[in-house]
Figure: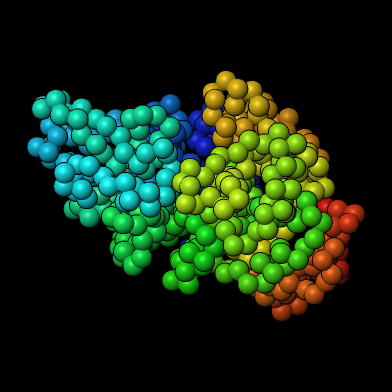
Length: 489
């Protein structure tokens, strides 16, 4: 079901303002380019986090369009949507009912009051210290209208206090029934792949980090995999964890995200040494979705724990700082490095992180496209966008640096840039050359260079990079003449 071709990632309103305009822009400027699929970031009614605090999955936010608009996009290419199985909006009908009636609500069991784990309502400090935090506290206080009591509820994520993202209890039959409804709605509207956002946080267990708790996490994933399969839908678990955890999922047959590659390419270009990148490419699982950029940032911790050297990581961070990046930080003291290094993600457009260097950017994309897996290109990256500093200043949200919304006029202007034209050609090459359905190899070379090759019977494609000069080219057999041809980067 998942095609070995390039996919696009975009918000529903980031290319033209809504889904109808997105469809028109795709047809006008990128006809057939993303036959691999379109990942539309949450298009549902939401109360925060730009769609990641959904009120429901049964409706499309009216400002974006309708399910018919989504279905039309899905008729031309595979459609990928998010399902935040860990949480739902504080303004959903489910949680509003709970706020009104408390334990008497028909949805009471859907949520996680602290009493489910600490009967006296007082979480123990030794338990809290072990939880992998995504905010200062994993709980929010809410007032129950019927009784006036203050109820402490589990809220892993959220910028506000109380949070807009309320964790769901997947041990509850109500939660499982809702997930069945949501998956059914996706199936009705041509959705072929579902990304399980933040799935690593769904297991809560006293005395643990409450993140990717084994073996319970596998039971949840297998239940969802079987549910999705009954609708002919593939699932893509999204888990930011150390690489060993990711590889466990891959070994279980799940698609995973290659969150290691984006930083490793930045490190390679900064140190001008391919040693770590070659070692990684030679041993990584192939059942991965690859990316360089996304709506968040380039991961470092915990995704690369055990893979980076502190000195090299600091050089990368310093270079990205010089190029205008901002950073998200690890909050849990236990999860920071002993020397205090705490960079969770580097935030900036990948084009800007590379200093706006066209050649370096195309080389980075070529490495991504040659790495085995399903390549995804974020819409800002497709247009080689630069850091949106004004958006960060106006919103106070560091991630807005890489979330610029393009009008149709802007898209028309950006596609005229040479770097964008060359990237489109590179995507077309990756989509159509049969070598990428063959055998991958990292060819021996010294650490100032990188040689990656694909062979499929008589077809071949070889990427050669000189890190000293920062030049690269692709040698391949031309499908029309069957002669060797070059694609300079």
